[in-house]
Amino acid sequence: MSFYGLTVCLFPLFSQMLGSPQSLPKMKRSFYAARDLYKYRHSYPVCTHTLNSPHLPSGIYIEEILTKWRGDYDKLEHNHTYIQWLFPLREQGLNFYAHELTQDEIKEFQSTREAKRRFLVAYSLMLDFYGVKLLDKSGNVARAPNWQERFRHLNESQHNYLRITRILKSLGELGYESFKAPLVRLFLEESLCHSTLPNMQHSILEYFVYTIRLPATRRRLLRYARQHYRPAHAFLWGPLPKRQRGVAGGNVGAGSSGIRAPAPSPEQQRRGEESCRNATTLFKVYVTLESSRRTIRFHLK
Ligand SMILES: *[C@@H]1O[C@H](CO)[C@@H](O)[C@H](O)[C@H]1NC(C)=O
Ligand SMILES: *[C@@H]1O[C@H](CO)[C@@H](O)[C@H](O)[C@H]1NC(C)=O
Ligand SMILES: *[C@@H]1O[C@H](CO)[C@@H](O)[C@H](O)[C@H]1NC(C)=O
Image 1: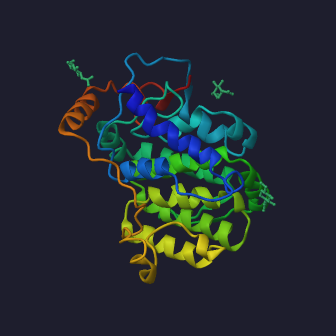
Image 2: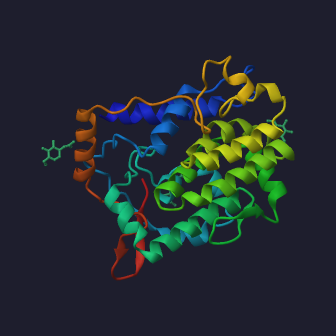
């Protein structure tokens, strides 16, 4: 089971890190990326395993990160543990002590106002690190005042593309699906039209767009990308334009990646559901209130 968790998470990660236009002379779609994101959009048919005895490390408070780390770009760049806590997923990340999210936690999160507020503060904290400003409660975004310096950093710091994939997935898991498109649209425009984030192009098209669950929204973004992508003939994403479709033997529709994950067997599904039920919800990043101090306890490795 644990290997299953690894397979689905690590391969897309490596291919995302290696998959910049620079390192691949001829660009190709990544099978692992497509499979990973197909699974994500279809709500993880198999719930990944949970840890048996999660480590209980020294605690810090989430408010501390949300307030003191804002604008501390060195810390946000170099510390690799906080991102899994701030943006939990129902899959195992690289921090093996971060607990994955369970269905119950998602429900609890969505009914806790303070937790949702903190999540949006965390989102805005990361956007600020990337030179992006969260404008409103609908998820609209724009360049932040210091965007030039931050974009220059983001253009060079490719491990952040992985973090952005995670952030987008987590938005969808916690009820903010509609926040994805404005951010992806901004990054597309910056990388394709203004050349401010040229290195990000591949990750946006291979990963960010395909975290979006609504096919019509994905299609709209891919149409926009197709219009602006150069060289135009090298555009690999989304359905082919109508006139080419026959040649490729009936391409897939609706902004689909064209790669489908195999449906889980009934046995896999049963085991997955069981392990979700069994999950010890030790770690509820945004939800667990520490009664005395009204802060949320937050552990890091
Ligand atoms: C990351 O931040 C946490 C919380 O402040 C700290 O405990 C940990 O040592 C940091 N890790 C690194 C590698 O700096
Ligand atoms: C982005 O990084 C590449 C090198 O990886 C560099 O050639 C390019 O000028 C950078 N662009 C911006 C806008 O910083
Ligand atoms: C769930 O817990 C039950 C009873 O505690 C155990 O028999 C079963 O093997 C567990 N399943 C998984 C997938 O961990």
